[in-house]
Length: 77
Image (cartoon, rainbow, N blue to C red; front, side, top):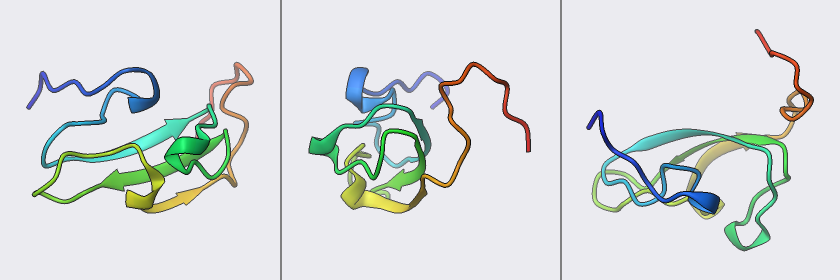
């Protein structure tokens, strides 16, 4: 729903939401969540039966071939 809010911190605000899909812009490396690198974009889901997880074993795809998201510059493509 419009007011859905998932776990904060390493949950990045979407972890735990049911029946969802998230596009993750992540600038922090969490080895326990199988992050590919600290600066990455990922598409996360667990389908409609399970609540979404920030663990990258549930990533549909990710890339770290992106500009540095922490450099303070507005990125436009």
